[in-house]
Image 1 (tube, protein in one colour):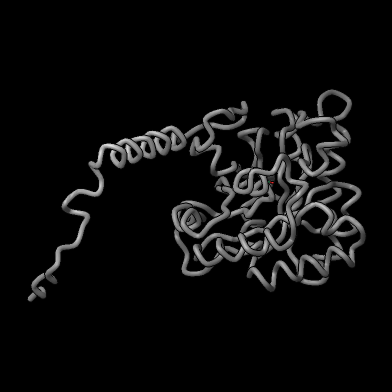
Image 2: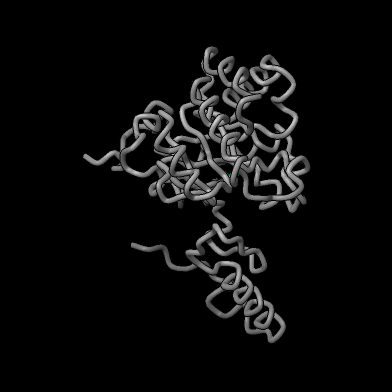
Length: 278
Ligand code: KIV
């Protein structure tokens, strides 16, 4: 049986760790029950990313996302899935202060949403916190390279780890590995660096804007479905144009309503109840 064949139970963090160097890990963000239902049969990991602040709530960045938002959407995704590991992002301000603060909030996410693991951003400076959480029963997916919660420090959503900066990103990936993370997202780092880190560390790398050599890939689901007509980052492959399709559908509905073509006879109820079916 292949590692990605359907299983009768949810994948666990150790299952994902065990995929290092094996079948590529399929990870996609998910924020709602219907989309979790669609994605779950095809994915290994559903990531309730704090990207939901921008994607679902129209915020300008991920900085305004709260723990309550993550728990609410996390619950919806857990309800809509059965086999994928559900990982929930720790939002900005909920874990950076101390390992104790991180444990308190991560435990709340795990218990109240029913997640299998949390994800948090940061490398060397978050290693102590990752070790603290893992030692207390909270599996952690790490996230290095471009960490969007630090957008103001980076001065934009820029590629990280070019030229001499590569050493910093490598040290970050090594530090989260030593700390006990079961996998690490590499976001917006050069292809050659992502490939090198993947061959150097013992945990799976999950790339976004990174390299096909990573142990797995993640995309924001709304991006790959083409739900945004005006957002086309280089690292996103569009597998559909649902934004355009939805716009056309809404326009057709509006035209039908204005022309009194909708509802049709088939959509309305008569005075008499239909004959019961035999
Ligand atoms: O918030 C998110 O969706 C993420 C992924 C893009 C990795 O962190």
